[in-house]
Image (cartoon, rainbow, N blue to C red):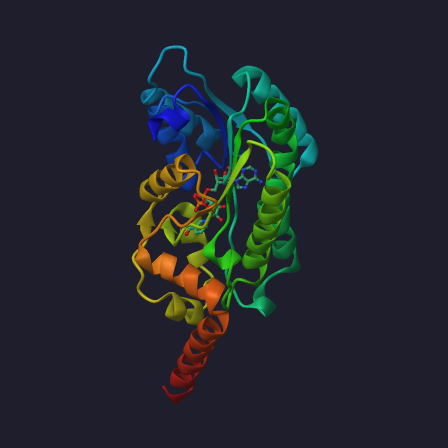
Length: 278
Ligand SMILES: NC(=O)c1ccc[n+]([C@@H]2O[C@H](COP(=O)([O-])OP(=O)(O)OC[C@H]3O[C@@H](n4cnc5c(N)ncnc54)[C@H](OP(=O)(O)O)[C@@H]3O)[C@@H](O)[C@H]2O)c1
């Protein structure tokens, strides 16, 4: 797997926290030049120092840039500057994202816009900015991080899941558009992962959502990043960096969605019935 990354250059959005931070650190450890992108300078700098700590070569490039991926102007200028510093971009990890989980009626209209602006448009603007130089070289790999909720969604995720479905549709279309090129694409669907984002969404998560998710064990960001990089190196399009249960959910959601709907609807009804009786 190291040969996919050694001597290559990558941009990781959301590289200052959670899964993105783990991706960036592991890429540096495999000898890749890495630029991370996020908004908060303090977290970015802390991650950059951690990346410096695992650098493999004195000339290896380790960069951090404060950028809001939802702002197309910021992205165009930022990616152009980073591409200049890196020399080229072999891999783009569109990982940055925000989450929110609550009942539809409790979800502020601004949250719907924010999810689309950051999760969906952030992915589109970054891809627009990076793709031309990949086209010119007929090489490169675009990696879009979505979620299993971008295949089949459940109570609480009206705003978040819509933005992840949008990434899914965007990626399927672009993958097909690039079919006659050597540019590769991957779509990553992480399971519940122990990160600040997961902690944040838990603050408003409805009990029905928790009941459906059950007692599935949280993955670590390091494990999700490692399995993601393994899947990207293997050239896989759908990457499910989790245990067998994640793969089974994806298989059931894509092949027998009616059965999946039966179970999640039953869980919601049973939960509410129990609540009424208690
Ligand atoms: N954790 C899970 O359970 C889980 C499950 C499925 C999918 N995912 C997906 O995996 C990806 C990473 O999630 P995570 O859990 O690792 O999240 P996280 O720890 O909260 O990290 C999110 C990263 O994105 C950056 N970011 C957010 N908004 C941004 C913006 N407008 N411009 C630039 N950077 C921005 C954040 O930095 P700033 O806030 O400083 O900008 C941070 O570096 C997301 O796409 C998420 O939806 C996560």
